[in-house]
Image 1 (cartoon, helix red, strand yellow):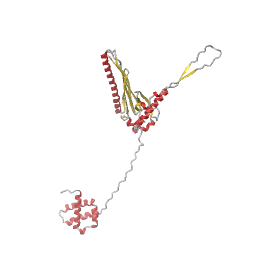
Image 2 (cartoon, rainbow, N blue to C red):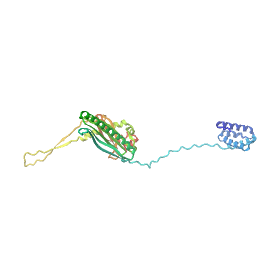
Image 3 (tube, one colour):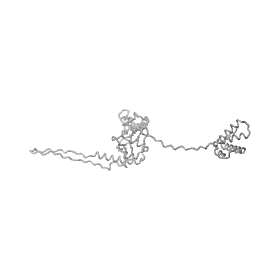
Image 4 (cartoon, one colour):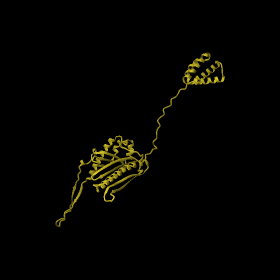
Length: 363
């Protein structure tokens, strides 16, 4: 049998219903016909099923009997009231209860080891020293977050390898000079240094190595900060909403700290002038007096670095000895190459940090 679908089926049933109505007009309730057609969504399906059943049961019957069955089925179906849908109420937002959440009190969960070393390279007869390699080496030996441990060890090991490579190149150059001339004009040296600060959450490392031959020195500086809780490499842009604003503020704070430190070291010094020995002894004893001389040292503030003098600025979160006060170590490299450091309170700069920066720097 060919299957009828969609609108073709509806049209066929409509035609069958109208034909049946014309053949049996005397028995059709015309008042209910409109209601039956309007409710075709349920009526034509029920009628079709019952018509099929009646046809299969009676086989070949005359049209009057088939028409009677169809009319009764249609009447019963159309008599049912049309259901009306009730819209579901909009659910209220679910309240999330944070009363069971607690803050994590971060403590040092990693161990930093710094090892000092020194080695040198000499000629085969040990009569000439080519170069000296000195400094320290840093390694994270233990950490709860192994990803952070491995990541920062890769950074510092890579920097150390650069310094070691510079040392090997220097030795090779000076050895070639010695083999050519029998002497070397200047011995060389390579110095590598790692400094770190931490606030218990983040670890910042300042890395420096310098290659010196005679009066000439070449220096390389790098800096890295890691979130030891998550293992993320922290850049200033990832923790600050206004990078330029925070850098300007920290440069000014660093310049002020350098000036304050310079003034603190220049304090008046008091020296005592000894009482002269009297030339002759008399019966009248004069009171012993001591003359004090005040020597005041001065500084030229123009010689101190200004905020605009710092070409490079690094900001490292560090620990504070005062509860509720948050500190950073500000590292600035001036135009003349001198590196300055100072601890600066950053609570007044909190507006510069984003949510992640607040969790790291204000831990």
